Amino acid sequence: MSLAFWTWAAIAILVAGSLAIFVWFVFDAVEWVRRHPAGKGKGE
Amino acid sequence: VSGIDSAIVVAYIAGMLLLGAAVATRIRGFREYFVAGGQMTTPLLVCTLVSTYYGLDVLFGGSEVAYQEGVVAWFFYARPYYFAIVFAAIFVAGRLKRLDALSLPDVAARYYGRGTQGVVAIASFLYAIPLMAVMGIGVLLDLVLGIPFVWGVLIGAGVALAYTLMGGLVASALTDTVQFTLMCVTLGIAAAIELHQQGGWNALQAALPATFLEPMGTYPVWVLIVFGLSALSVLVEPAFYQRIFAAVSYRAVLIALGIGVALWAAFDWIVTVLGMAAMAAGIETDPRYALLMVTLDALPIGFTGLFIAGVIAIAMSTIDSYLLIAGGNLSYDLYRPLFRPAIGDAALLRLTRWMIVVAGATSVGFALFFQSIVSAWIFMATMLISAALVPLMAALYLPRFARPRAGLASSLTGLGVALLFFVLVHAFGAWDEEWGTQIWRVTVANRSFDLWQEYAVLAALPVSITAFAIGCAAGGPAAPHAEEHRP
Image (cartoon, rainbow over all chains, first blue to last red; front, side, top):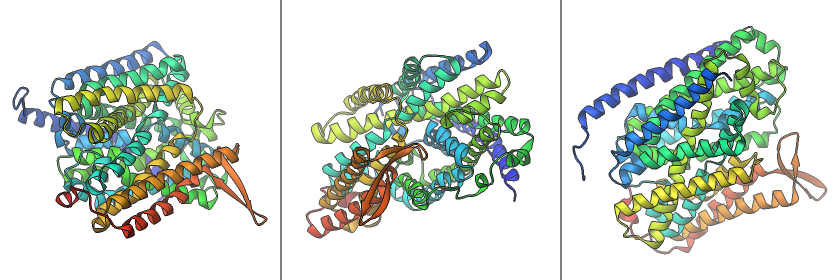
């Protein structure tokens, strides 16, 4: 495949890929906070 | 740069500080501070691995090579790292994850004792001092916002230092998520706009010399080999080690590195394209700033501010993580084993925070003192590979032969030979304008050899391997705790 194709593929991976991972992280973090409420487990 | 663009940059910096302060309230001990309590999940690992490992050296260094030489920047400067990362993910990360360790020198200590731990800690500290990123942020703020270099260095290092001090690895990783998204999205959009303005890929290609599209470019083959060998630093990269220990599981590391390789490859290719676009557009500048110049030329108001924030993010995500590692090297890997093995958790946490300040002050001091170090990253990577690669890989794959004498001999001679090589090339060689590096021409029996400073690793590695073998042959007892920690 041509370098032009790979260039647009790289742009798509960077923009769409990073946004998708950020959304994944937000869902993951919400779940983590739900399982670890602040104050619980202090002094561990 | 417009008022809107400046406001975006200020808002970004304020956001990072608030995030650090919020995390600080949840830190309860050294393990939580230094390796996030081993709780890092896959998406967080992807963000922190990708953004930490890629700093301004990649952005400026990669585009510099592309601006001068073309696609060789991707094929020989960047691509060897993907092979090394895939190898590390499959063959090294699993073994490391099974050890109950917290840092790279910690692994050396398990197999070789305190001597090797000390040498590896010093090499890791030298490598981790984020000199290039701190200098880069000073140059960047000067170029785009007109802030004097000294103030730019102090602001950039100061902000990253502040939130890392407060929240440790968790703060560093959480800010990395924003920084990762910002750097990937803004770079991708900038490339799309630039390509569109230049009339598409074919127009870009037509405006470049034919050698720009040859994967090997015009570099001598030895330089390409050294470019490839420098990827071995991945196998002893302190930030990778720290994140492997911080990961919730080996599976999370494996997936994160797999996704990371795709993102790094895309990032490198876009950096290469933008470097070549600067050449095609006829922009005349210091090659290091080619990408910055061509992008700032192309972007509309608003996007410019986002892009600058993205570039600051690229630098800060590197500065914060490596300050944490350098501070940990001084407190956990050097001071604790040598002076206070029984140090309490609270005291260790307090000491580490102070040592992060020391690492920050050292970076700022070096950045202000050596304003023109171009090859700093080569020096730092060479020191780390030379001191740590042979003993660490031997420990993981040939634990039967891991003896304190072998480890110490290997790390000390590796570090010593690499340092000696650099000193000799700088004492007897000369700066070569064409290649932008220090070269020592040696004549033996009427034949001349050009010794580049980059070749130091070629001299140091064989010596380090030989010293390890001699150390093994000399025998001696195993490290006191070696057996119980063997995976």
